[in-house]
Amino acid sequence: MKYLNLDRTDAYGKLKEEYSSGKERLSLPDLLSAERIRSCSIAAGGGLTYNYAAKEVNEKVLRLLSDLAAETECIEKYRALAGGERMNTGEDRRVLHHLTRGELAGPVTEKDRDLGAFYREQQKRIADFSRRLRAGEITGSTGKSFSTVVQIGIGGSDLGPRALYLALKNWCRTELKSPLLEARFISNVDPDDAEEVLSSLDFERTLFILVSKSGTTQETLTNRALVAGMMRSAGIPGLDPERHFVAVTSETSPLAGAPGFLDSFFIDDYIGGRYSSTSAVGGVVLSLAFGPEIFERLLAGAHQADKAAMEGDVRRNAALMDALIGVWERNICGYPVSAILPYSQGLHRFPAHLQQLDMESNGKQVNREGSAVAYSTGPVIFGEPGTNGQHSFYQLLHQGTDIVPLQFIGFVKSQTGYDTEYENSTSQQKLKANLTAQIVAFAAGKKNSNLNKNFPGGRPSSLIYGEQLNPEALGALLAHFENKVMFQGFIWNINSFDQEGVQLGKILTSQVLGAAEKRGDLLDTYARLLKL
Ligand SMILES: O=P(O)(O)OC[C@H]1O[C@](O)(CO)[C@@H](O)[C@@H]1O
Image (cartoon, rainbow, N blue to C red):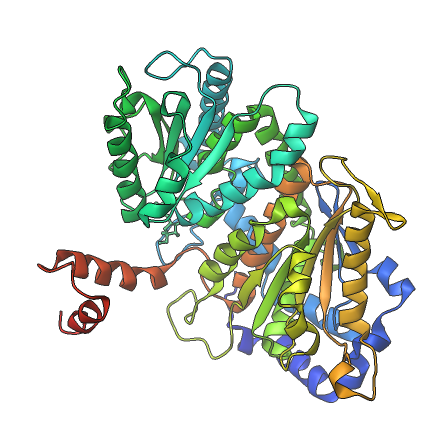
């Protein structure tokens, strides 16, 4: 396989040339048409469709982007990654999150161990544990059945699972006959975060899921101690914290086999934190809260999206098309920011998950061999659900001095089916009307001689949509973005699977905590740290 920096590819030069010579051919108000809206759609798995009609790309640009995908061997690299090649060069590791939802390139083995079988075995153990606990066969230390689970973790051990739980909570509440366990999350080392969650819990009926792949993360271990301490001081006769904790960690972590847990479930170093939602990291909390069948349906949707991303024809590969257009916008058009705008309240924490997924993966300044790259890599990602965002930051998106490419997400039906009519339309109809109105307003704009009221348009967006946000659609949505980020990493020739940029802050924090005086004024500590 060839590993070329983006600026060494032929397609990159041609794309730059096309942009500088053909800006008027790329005018969005002129490009957008009813015919284009119909033709620029790609099935993305899980019943989802990716539509890129409102992107600043014409036929010529699409041909060149397709050449770029071929030149950078995106599909070959994806196949190699799925087959177990050590694509995480920084840490010399395989990258196997796809394998948690099914094989794409045959079995992956290591020293005769089938790694897919290992993930499936963990999944089966989680399913058995969840069924027994939900049936009341596994109880708390005082004999009461569990009604609440609390995940303690941070970064990838929190954001993805939390976003997925919140995304399915209302759908499950509406669709399932079996009762749901409530899930809560503690992540921040700020004690107010834990206190707020713990203050409303019945400890006797709560199971804590301690999630840390490394088993060394300061925030997570501190919160474990805080929870156990609070349980001990609650003064409840017979309450034993050790029978209220399970662990999710890697087999090589200090937590593996450590005392103090009712049970433990495992991942391995081949699944990066931000890619771990479909492993035990997300599997335990989602299976306990909703039942293992729901988690299996989510995995099935993710696997469909993974298979769809293997398609060699760019025009039939949603994740690859999304990735290529993102590179066009970042490197050729020069847009440094991108917004995720779900028109679905269930997805209100999904932008936060995508922020870590994208920015921790592709916020890199060196290529996979460690040499500096001379072009931009990952954009800044932010987002909020519509319509709330419309009344907050959309002003800048419509009329600000920067162009921010937008990723809309929407569904035909709501999750609960509850709806009400007011002024001749229902709430769900209003939600969808707002979504389509925004896409057109951003793309086409509206001329006004009063510049303060002028909408310049030309603000590109794409839309991922489906019938309803259900487990399959959510799994596919998650995998779509994971695969998009992976393809962009291939095109930028960077390693999207390590995160050295988080280390320095951790080291300096330990130095502050190791210093004799930790209780000083914030500015004193700040100044003293420079001398340490
Ligand atoms: O699961 P762990 O090992 O506690 O790590 C949590 C998070 O910390 C990070 O390593 C960043 O500090 C993330 O990549 C990861 O998701």
